[in-house]
Length: 87
Image (tube, rainbow, N blue to C red; front, side):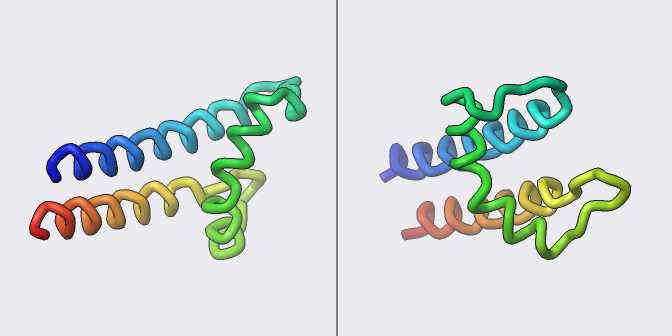
């Protein structure tokens, strides 16, 4: 069962890195948003970021929703890992 907990933890970590990559990508000018890897990155992260973007409007052109997503993902990761650990 510990391997499953480890796998879940790696999944959450990987998803955080994908969101971080998307943040970095948004700072790079002239990105080809139709490139398959960029499109995949946006397709994977948008379902989580979009609802939070509606909750936290951008201020001065800066999107603060990823910060809230990071906080919520960490809370959910801790809860899921602890729940799986004690099952």
